[in-house]
Image (cartoon, rainbow, N blue to C red; front, side):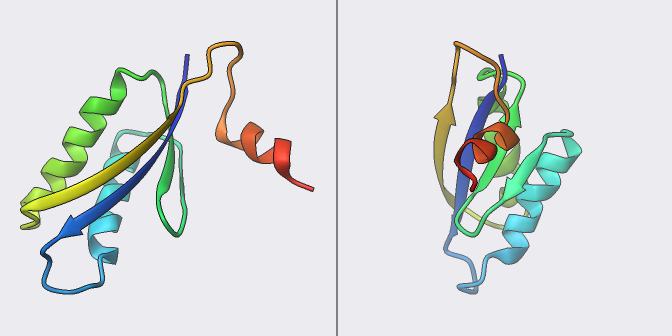
Length: 98
């Protein structure tokens, strides 16, 4: 069953407090994998086919940021692994929208 994850990536020790270029690289990784995602101000929500995909995705993200010279990355992850029915990000938003 698909899962929804929220990922917040914080590159540490960069030359500037602005991290937009690094986050754009994260979004490139998501697009390259063909993953549905929503970018938010404090993190990015992603629909994954299964929880097994999460480790590989995080590895790809960290590898790409490392290629840009980032030597330390702090990543926070929240997982919505609902097993009683299949949901997507739109469903979750519709359920609370007015």
